[in-house]
Length: 399
Image 1: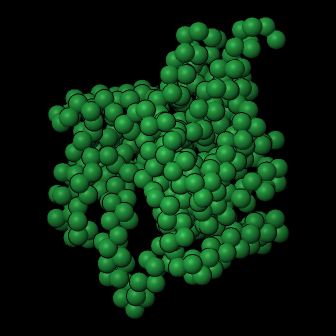
Image 2: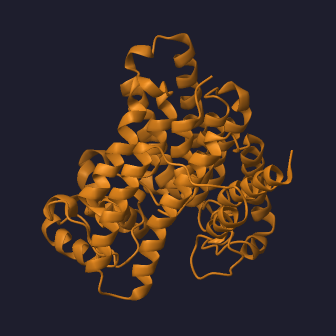
Image 3: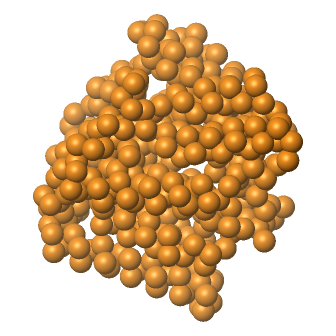
């Protein structure tokens, strides 16, 4: 191997490994996600043979994203921080998508690095139980050590929800890079699922898993009698039952929320639960309000910093959420994308995801459905693992 190929291989490995730890910022920046992956990518393009690659789908989607970004930027009149942050988020998404497309096209994504990163997350989650302050050296954690009081752990992420997101995304990446073969890393996938229920304990991620599982059953209803599919279905039910037993035994936050719901007056009771927990209320608003705003404003893009204004207007008519979110940052990938980019964002999503459901790509639909469902929740636009998964779907074939 000549020096250029060695340098490309080293830069590619460094870029990938950095991308797998998007929240490890060593408290050097005032935001959750780190910029190191972006900088490594720029360095690689400048000083090595690392390049962008984009098929027609990616190029057209990028063009629509840029058009939507221009509209959103032109109507943003608040603090410049939100303008620069919004531009960086979407530009970095395109940047990561094009680089990961190149890495996948030339087989430079090493599965062993993804597996190693996965085990590191699990290791640090365990260490957090005994040495909670250790985590603060690496990330801006918003969670104290309340593991024995029913709250989940965050590992090398800011909060338990993000840990759940990362574990699911890593499992999808490992599954893709294993040629869509579940058995190859079945133990690791099992550890990840158990970790979401027993370590992360994120209510929103567990709801996402239940939603994705329901969709998988609906789309595969005719396969339930298939022995192989039924075996996986029973396995998923077993994990769910373990999670239920654990939540009841240790009276976790999820358990306390669920037992407060009155079945006899389900809708009112559910509304009360949502409004009683500000975290749940805000996350739900950050998905629902952008979609309602999209239709109310006829698909027009919105400013980066006015979601709170739209929330106040819509909540006054909706009369469901007692307290409108005051946050300027949208805590939903789909919510942010649709609200900020408007019709340009919706079309770009259709262009990216519709082909993946066609026979041409012969994908196993399960990880795709889980991935799409996961992006409802608090996944930052600038998270490099998201475009990595998309590139993997397109360029890594089933074997």
